[in-house]
Length: 249
Image (cartoon, rainbow, N blue to C red; front, side):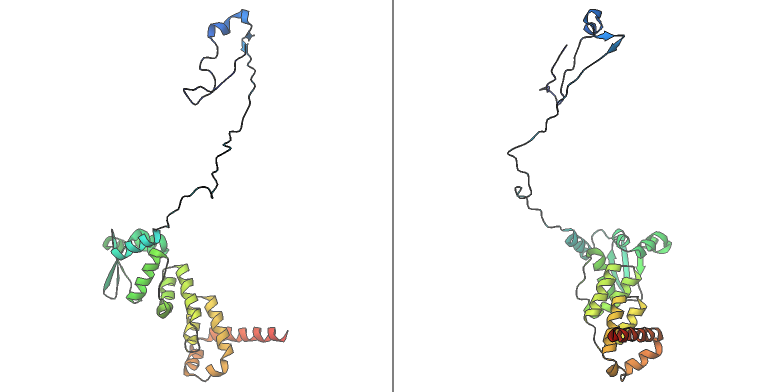
């Protein structure tokens, strides 16, 4: 008994719904059941379906993907105070924000909203150690991961980024401080590098100080600096030894 399986036009299946009648199968004269066992021998052929004339490469499909609006949407959400559920209070100013956004970006805010019963009930977070423009710039970064015009407040942004564990914002601030480093602010920024553990800024300060040591040693800022920053002075000494030994090789 041989039958060829073909695709059923009425469905997606191949073959026969009724391959053999039960009576035909049980009829001993047909010899299909030997010792009450049915043996079926099948030959299967697998064919690869190809679309010879169909080109679905990236170059053949002309669909323009619109630019993502995620950042601009979050920026608008921050500026418009739409659906806010908490308040950041600083210097008598209230800035409306969203707990979910703050908690997602900063583990410190996450802990504040999860563990602080008082602040969780009032939905108000007091920030006392920073100016409002610094807090607003941090919030803008939290919503958009972008900053603008932080050159004049980079030191404060570095501090608040460290406080709220915003590592990328901290790195952006450190880079800004390195770019604008000069003789007049090197002592202040050298101190910042120690306080907030910013290795690149510290190295830049060390190099600038060593290159201008003769001039700096005569300034009042340097004389005050060496009295209160002994560890940084030690790091300078070690840096100078390393520079000298490298130069002698």
